[in-house]
Length: 242
Image 1 (tube, helix red, strand yellow):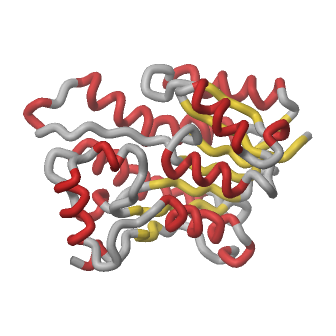
Image 2 (cartoon, rainbow, N blue to C red):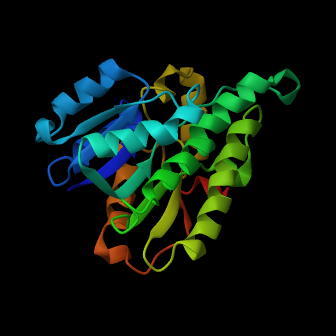
């Protein structure tokens, strides 16, 4: 069996950057709900023929995640030793405008998909391989953000999962979460220039970039972090101090 690193949200933003950065030294499973962009990211990765594409819409196919990933691993004779969850979504709305589909979509992508994926990776056929889980939480899970309460709550759920699973899965498996602040990604650049300028001024070290997050991912996957588990780590340019 071939050993893989699973990266969700690999078709854009920080997930895309991470896939390209890790591809020279690892076999990757690239996961997203955009098949066209996944193929493009695969093409741009080093050793593209070594990487597997997993197309799955976490927002609408929550009940299919378990069987879809299980089948993918069987079909490719693959095992997963590292799992990085970049997949995420949000939409700014005041709480009075929430609807059930809105809440479900955000929690399905940001949190419930994680549970289904981990359930697959803990099956007997893979559990001995799995060593490291890195989840992406957010600064707003700790300090809040007006109009972003459901997103913040979904990321807070990730933090709680990390605290608990670090005990449940030890000592074989490490699990940690990163809490990025204002990162310049294609999604972020769709915001108004005034909003980006405001975020930059609120961040002591200025706006961050995908590499600032991926550097921490690489560290958490390395032997240098062998004694770190159950942590939620700010990667926010100092914004959490204000």
